[in-house]
Length: 474
Image (cartoon, rainbow, N blue to C red; front, side):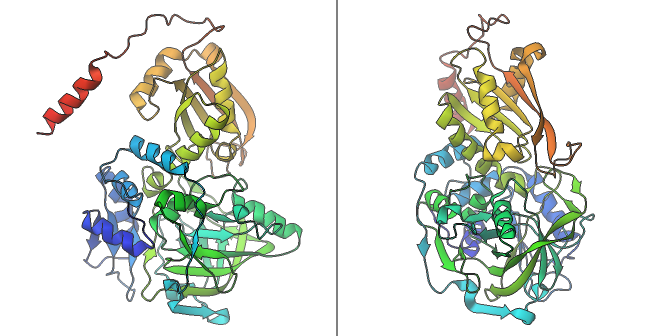
């Protein structure tokens, strides 16, 4: 399997696999680049990445979009054949998770050290060809960076270090705004720093190897290290280097490393921004970052991500990386769990297939989903189906909802639970009623319904499926 050390190596592979479309015609920075990235996923499960290097008004701009924006590209990022199905990709992700943790490898001479600017010489606009993504955005955003921070109370504990993706608004040449969702690790780091009356050092890394982007969007537990998961997914230790100002461990192969601090107890208006929910979030008070240094490769590639009405690149990027940690966390408590589908709108809906020990068991599985690190902030609806229902097969899920779920006893509403403030259905931002739907077959001592004569697939169906697929491929 390929282990990519930087974005450029992955772009080369995408090119060779017919998964990179180079736009050589001159394009306008707005709306052309975002509109093209909006359109690309509509090409289907093998949609290509896009590369622009002829942008009106910019000198030597290099912009990569939709890098993870299809199942084909996501498979290649994991070193799998580009035709690998999403179910197979999730299952392979789970197998590789079993290798976790794989310690990272420290390397010297990172390519991002080729050029530096510091202090008053810092100017984000000199390094990044910034564009707006949606016409209602309040400004320029950086939305596919891996942001590195450490727990101020335990900075030497690499498990409590965080690598995460957060939306970042550019407020000035050395001033940024970052949204730390309260359920995310960086918000805990910031809270601890502010309790000490300190700023929080951060390193914002752009243009990373494809696995870093995947793990940075994975809802891991607080004391789990993203670089150690990257090593497990890559099949080789993740290469890291020390950022020169903050000393934070950052990806060795990044195109750009921005260092600075989140200024303690300082907030400014940020937004609006067209979010992954398919809705704009309004302006709100968010943290302020003072940029102290920028390091970058010569002729850096600016990797950007369009998001809006699903499906867009973000939905492919965070699909498997949301399903798998939920699967691992649930099976620790409930080994009966077979599969987890949390692909839709970053897992605001989670579908779980599970066996049952006894009556009422499925509802307990649903409640456990709501208390996972992901469920606390995202899962608003949990649908639980039987072990023989494929949660990735929506017609089967709809069949389960249609024939197994009785509203009289199978809908559990849990009021006033936490949710990220971006969730548009929350009447009070940050709080929502959550719903568990039990669409499983009742088992003893639950005797509701008449389920004794379910039709099953014929034993010969599997062999005939393979035979028909072979015939159809001729």
